[in-house]
Length: 292
Image 1 (tube, rainbow, N blue to C red):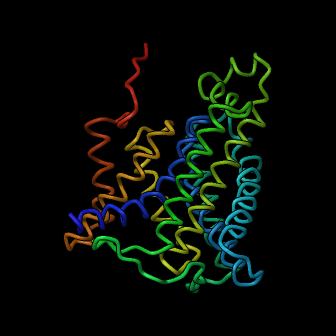
Image 2: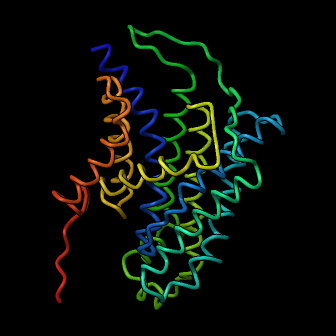
Image 3: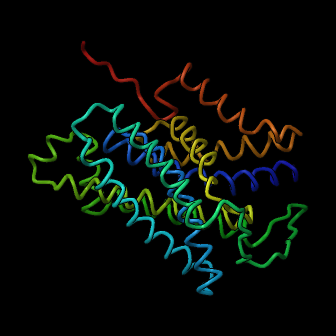
């Protein structure tokens, strides 16, 4: 039982990161039906902003996290306005290819600016290991899970109880009807990208804290796994992204505990294949009939 609880804690730590990234995927898809493959690279930018905030500016964890989220929120709006807005009336494949192009631009632009070398993330939490009933954990584990939970609750509050959130739900339900009702669709879409990018930035800082290293290509695998989590929960459904991310983290933790750590990525993508075959709409999604 102690080993089981330990693996659950480890899985929740990693799964909370996947959940934050998956929320950005699912929000953008729910609004503009775009799979933003540049989302993982926004995470990378957030990790580097947090890195420079802690090393060069001497900030502690919380101010660095907030600064990273603000910078990436602005970056998300900039990307949406420059790269995606002009393509809204074009076929979806056009926007998808553009998203891949933006991803490559951020990755290799990051290499040009900060260099390709792996950077060691500064320790922002004490390394003291606590033991409670045979289960070991660090302050960083608690901070990561708590940060992710607070951000998820805050997102739910924004979506359900604010004017911007109501506009986002209206646009996701019916784009044209929302425009006829006087909703500023452009600002709503920009707000969606800003919130999703801010969550990705938070995930980037948490990854740096958890793994103690960052590099310009660090967002590729977490971004793809978060996409798996979003599809697992039902892409376009916010609670589904949360559950999918946490579930994926726990599965990876138990796969590593079983001695197959090199198979973690394979298991994640195997889950994607199984979900697409068995239940393409995801755990929380519903199949919708369309007349041809």
